[in-house]
Amino acid sequence: MKINRAYVVKREYADCFSSENATPWVETAASGLTANLFPGSSRNLWTVFNGRPTTYSGVVLTVPHKPGAEYRDAWNGLPLTPAIEEGMAHLSLTLDPQQPGCVVQDWTP
Image (cartoon, rainbow, N blue to C red; front, top):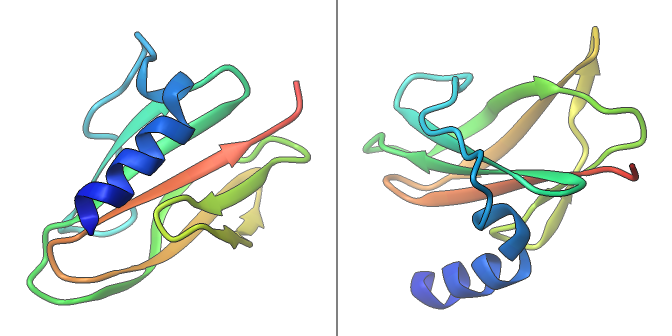
């Protein structure tokens, strides 16, 4: 199931995953989480992994907010409504133990 979902996400966001400007190991909001940034033409995608032995629920990433940007939990196909404070978007997810996630920030150029 996870392999199928990963294939769907990779195909849907091919512009991000083919980026030559990917940034591994970006800062996360909690210990035990790892994330990588894949910038696209008018969106950013972060893969997230919960390396903890327990479920994590809360802010996973704090990223610069772009006016008008929309956010999505791409792994589960759900919209996200982050808290926006002082120009930063605080992105929250629930990640099961040692499981992946994927967050997308879309904006109109």
